Length: 94
Image (tube, rainbow, N blue to C red):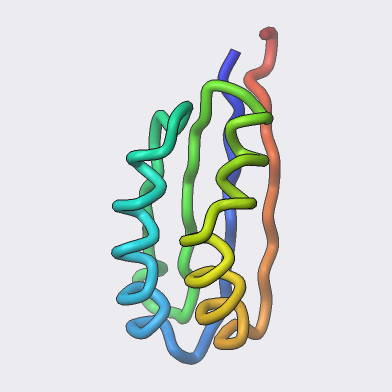
């Protein structure tokens, strides 16, 4: 069973957040258990959505403890956000 995370960020600095998430996505995709890490932007607003999929919740927990997550997301991205919503999901019927 996979473990999916959807993160929704609202920011007035969308282009900067997307720029910072480029290296974040690359590093995350190399993590053990990471099946998918994609960054999306709203067409007409300052919304950035990240869709992540891992083999397990433990793999996501390890991701959150990684150096690149701490440095990039917590250190650089979060201060640029006016809103951050992270939803953890599991497949229905799993």
